[in-house]
Length: 393
Image (cartoon, rainbow, N blue to C red; front, side, top):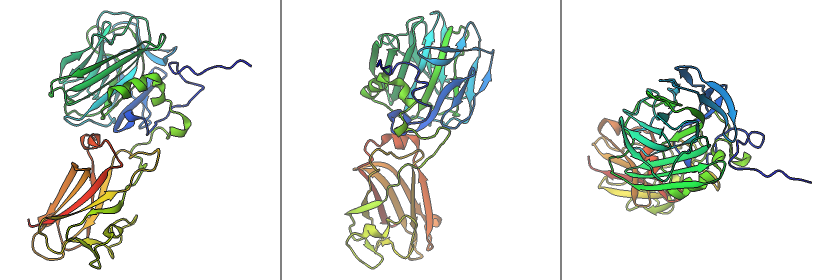
């Protein structure tokens, strides 16, 4: 019997079906994951089809890229727009990736914009410029590579990731398997600018590069060089994940794991509802809130109760968005202050303050959502803690 081996660089239709792998490092804070169908992009994250503008392009299947949007000449402002794509905030990390095959080298073409306005004035753009690439921020081309190149007439997977002045870029020739990568230390000012959100795929500019545009994605997360290199070894796994890793496409904000207090770390003078001082986390670990059990601070003097959070189940991660929920009240009319903090070890990820009219003598529920920047700080979900501090106003 003759077997057919799986080629990780080839379009995997027939081997896998589209989906989103929540365990893939680039899926954290996913903003857009686009595939081509009938000469148009659709977003696996939301299930929405982009709004095409500009001149029509031809639909083809180019192996090993698969279905592509084809540019056969100058199309000016041609693009596929997704206003509903998740926005990136000022200073957030960002990762772009996709497939491209140029058929001529002159000119300039923006492959992917991080906002639906099709401009990098308030966002980022990954572009092909002749045989090279560039990443543009705030309306200016700020960074380009010398080792990672795009040869005319050859299909490439590309991926780049940037955060706070640090950048990594990889390219993989899908025919030869040739890998190129670059590691950048850059000006801390080189970071994503605040924008309107959305996404624009394909080309724009006064002189567009002819060629084929395949799947594309971007997320508000930062990947290290080894993660990008590992991704390039099976680039299609992001858009066509193995069955065991896949969740249905078109779903956003799925809760994959719920973490609850699972041990006292340090409690100072805090107690449970019965003035107990042992395993008081048991009073705040319920799935459905129960106001009959709680923790308390006898005097709001600035002491802190700190609890470790349970770890995600093996093979699972927190979904996006990540919400922190808790209930609280004060026991006397005098003004007080409650500070709630989420920490990874001793590093503060986020904190929230309740005082004045925001802290009453009746229980109320607060649900806080981590920003993309805050979530990007977390490197170990097995080392998270929640802290409560009671203090004078």
